[in-house]
Length: 265
Image (cartoon, rainbow, N blue to C red):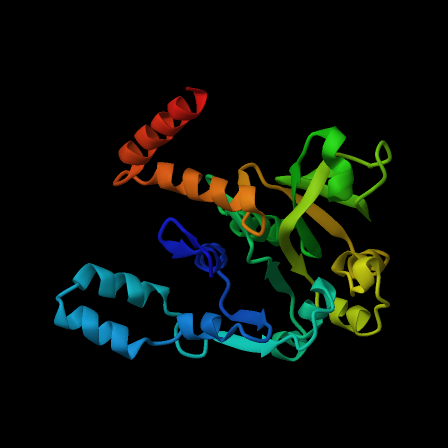
């Protein structure tokens, strides 16, 4: 719910999903996260206040945020047992269908939304799709890395996956950036998945088992990703999105110049 310029991070991720044609949103939350559910609900008091003050533009914006009735579901992950476990918690809502997974602390900016590009590739290939980006080879040990195979569409076939490989051993410099399209068979794997790194149920471990039976492709996202779970990523996201806004770009740009000048002085 941290705000980037004037929208919470999760709203950027929901907008990306809706742009890609996602029809049902499933939120996996934990204890104390009721504010997320409330955010995507009708806010009677706020709407009434806006009407009384003739804030038409704000009312229109609020209506645009609200998913249609029955379009959003919420479920709890009672224990913080890792991403794989969080995905498994949504199994009964998702059912026996392919699904998209978007990590809500990662927001992405590009000419085409990352998930939209993934859906286009999925229409060509089917199977499982993982969004990937390039990093400097010297930094590959910090990420989940995929092996690069035959080129297909705006991506390639994935030949392998490794989580944070030792320096100098990475199969490529393409890292997994937090967007996935997965087949429902992953749920059965995650149900009996042993705990891995950090004593958590790791999604990557589950995907490796699924890859033995099904094909995986990588969608090469050519844009910018901001990790809002990290201090620098959150700050950079605010700067980048503020500079995109015609109504505030001038003042923000000037203040950044002033600040840099003062720091140099």
